[in-house]
Image 1 (tube, rainbow, N blue to C red):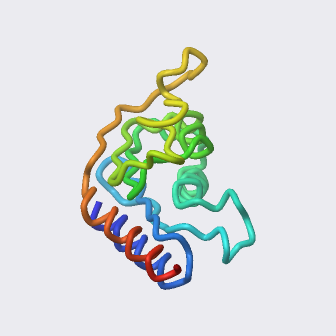
Image 2 (cartoon, rainbow, N blue to C red):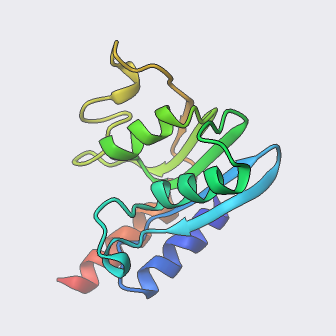
Length: 142
């Protein structure tokens, strides 16, 4: 999670919402990135999507079955779906997102009967640091 927090800090330095993600496969970091929605003019360029795309290319596969994802904020519905479609084994996330999250809040994507794959979910990992990073970022913007 420390690497994901580093990616979130880099995203903040670029003016992006400070969310970072790291994808680990068989003990090796294979992708790390932060939000890039503003930089790329792409509303889908969330940290999770960025690392899933990079890992898919690196592994030459759309299925990331032996991979674990670490992300600083609870994934939104789009990212939760991408995690499911990629068949990611485990999801670790830091801060909860009561407004936009889709894992433990909102639509609770993985609890849906139409969800084909639900990763093992571990929340609250590095939660204090992740939440503080977001609070500071938005406080400075106001």
